[in-house]
Structure formats: C-alpha cells, structure tokens
Image 1 (cartoon, rainbow, N blue to C red):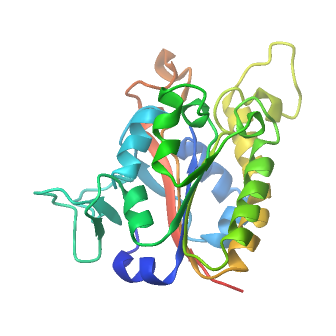
Image 2 (tube, rainbow, N blue to C red):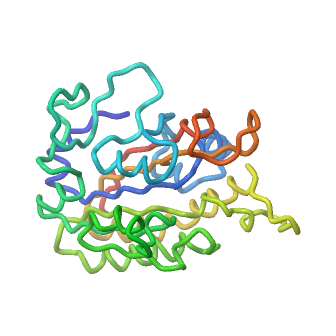
Length: 270
C-alpha cells in the first residue's frame, strides 16, 4: 500500500470509501489481468493489492472498517493504517495516520467538518430493523432503497446515480462518502450470459457482476472529478466460497473468504 499522509489529505480532499461487498481477490485479480475491468484499471493501473479482511462477513468487517481497521496487506507487517480511532498501544498508527478522538472514523470526519453520507447496499444497511440501522446511523445522512439491494440487477447504477446527486449538492463542503456496493453479493446469477432454470450463483456470475460494476464507475468518478481532488479507498469486506474444499458462502475461515482486493489512489479534479 502506498504511504499517504492522511492528516494532509483530509484537509485538502474529499474521501470516497467503497466496499465491493463479497468480492473475492482471485476473481478481481483475474479480471484485472485479463483487461476485463478497464475502468478500474484506468483509475489504479497498478492493480489490486491482496489483503486479509478483518472479518468474515459484512457486519463484522464494517465495524472494523469504521473503527479504522481496513483490510491488512497480505505480506509481513506491521502495516501503517490510514485512519484510526485513538487507542492506546496501537502498533500500526504512525505520524501519517489520521487519528480521531472519536469511537469511529465516520464521526471523526464529521467532527472535522466533512459531510458524512452512506449509500447502503446489502441488508446490514437497509434500516428495516434495529440491526440494519447500526452501520448507517453512524452517518449524518444515509440512504437505502430496494433499488440498491442485492436482488436488483441495476443496483450499482442506481447507487452511483444517487451518489452523483449527493456530490453535486455538497459542492461547497468536504465530503466523506461511503458506498456499499451490493452487486457481487448473492444472488448474482442474473449477471450471467445465460440464465438457467436453476438460477445458480457461480464464480462466473460473480465475475460478471464485477464487470457490471466496472462499467458503472464513470458515473461516479466523473461527478467526483467535477468537485475537487478525492482520496479513494476501494476494497472488499470479505469473499465467498463456491464449493472450494466443500465450503459455500462466507462467515467462515477459508482463503476464498479472507483474501480480498484493495486499492487506494487519488482521483484528480478535472
């Protein structure tokens, strides 16, 4: 991971944090190397960094993310963190880490004057239950509709269009924008080239969902580039198994679950 002085960046740039919910590292890397995700490649040509997720399912990983524990590079450490909530004895907090005297980075950014906005995706962001409000309630504004959820084939398109509207409305204020992209999460069978009667998710439909997300990126990034420079964090919160070693799904300890892609980069204003 590149070394950034987040104390300086947070004073000068907007912050975009995207989680590609359930995206596996091996699938992301394979498509990247094959040139099948050209928009991701345009914005970070160095490719995905292989990391380990802090949790094996959405709620656990996002609780860690919002406390400042992003995916850890899958190489020997220690690895300095970008953000942190003040915590005595941290071995991964350096002078370049942006440290907040708040219990989470979201309220930390709000305290710094950023407008904090969440565009939810999977069920842990749907605000339909007390549990479904825990994560979105960290934000000043949070949005979720069925159009952003896992059963909507055009979910990313709807999410990024909403994000573009939010960016345009926040033109005079620094922004901390979080988007939980739901398209990779099951069900994803409807992204396949052919829809069989069994409606089965697979590695192929998982990959097709990522190509769909890649195609939607210009909507979001062009909106950001019309405002000011943006520091971007894009990662997965966990992967998922499709029968490897007889494992299926996630919330389990298997390389297909804990190995996730991550990228950080600065998107320059045009």
